[in-house]
Length: 367
Image (cartoon, rainbow, N blue to C red; front, side, top):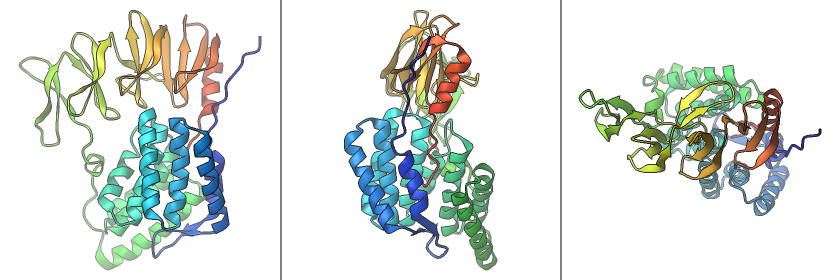
């Protein structure tokens, strides 16, 4: 029997590869990339624009707008770069996948950084580290976060980012940034010292996630803000941590709330326990989605409340490229992030996992 596999194509992968060739080295004086091939950049921008008209999907739009945002930033058109980068983030948020959100946030952070809007840049770079991500992607984001720190005189914090970048991403494009930034850090430290103490991730990210707490009198769960005061009252019998801006909570049934306590996923489910392909189980959301159980079957719900996969499977596991699914626990198939079938549920688990692994496209540069 021959199984038909639908390929998941990253419509911007070749354009990003072209960007690596068209961009020059980081300029030490401006901390901006030089241009090695202006004609090449213009060609990539035009091709990205043409593909945007042909590929309306949220993920495709995010990737293509991200490429165009990089080009406009490098060319010095910061207004256009910000429009494209902001739109790329919005499209990525609609999908919810960490692999889309991280590079989109980092690219918008880059636009803020080169304009000297460091607080906004630092927050976006921090958020770009959050979620289920490959080391190469977080390493690339860290390299640019370091440049923002150095521009502010936060030398110690910048050095921490550079160490992480060199450990996580050894690509020549990233290592050239690290080498120049290390030389600059040495010079800046000799002149003015190492700057303020490094900030922790919550401070850098603007304290994006309230902390879970249990009321000692009622035993119910709520959430605290950074000042230690409740921002969501203890009204839930069970609750998960905030992940991607939402938290799974239970009263009689499970649903999800946002950071203001507004219900964004209706309380309709027996559980929101999300299993990942590598064997972990998370109460709540992974990559913007959760495995939602209802009447003995499992589906997938988006953090917006939209049902991505109706509850018809016995087992579902989340993967960066989609979902591993089984109707009986013996035969497996795969779905894309939009819930469309990629591989019918007629193969063994290992083959199904390999097909998802092959579909992963890591957008780790240029950011």
